[in-house]
Image 1 (cartoon, helix red, strand yellow):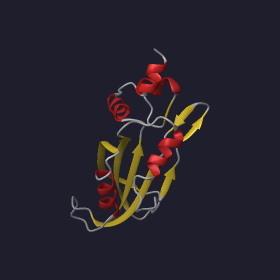
Image 2: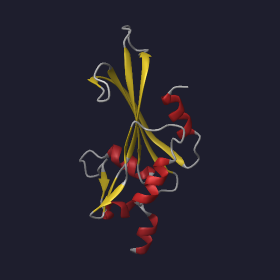
Image 3: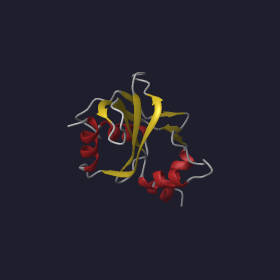
Length: 155
């Protein structure tokens, strides 16, 4: 089973995960890991079913997403000056010829799994045309909008 298949199955079969968005695109750029092969980017934007709003909880959630694979690269969730910095997992897989191509050239799949605090945050991020919502971090004021417990405390 390929890394992509393992990742798809792990995410799909986890009842605590919402897969809010997926994308896949071929690029003429070369993968940072291996400058000899073209790259295919595959991205999963996921969220915990019930929402999580702290770096520690999101880090634990992220590390349990794909238990059967070690990521090639990992960025941890962190809090810096009260700003929640988002983490991600990257997996690299050299695969055979791209089915969309007539040229027989191996390519690298760069598979990114990007967890966010909740599904609503991802929807807003995708619809945000003025870049008011960041894909890299969230301030306490922004997170307050999504966290039901914080909203109740401020009423």
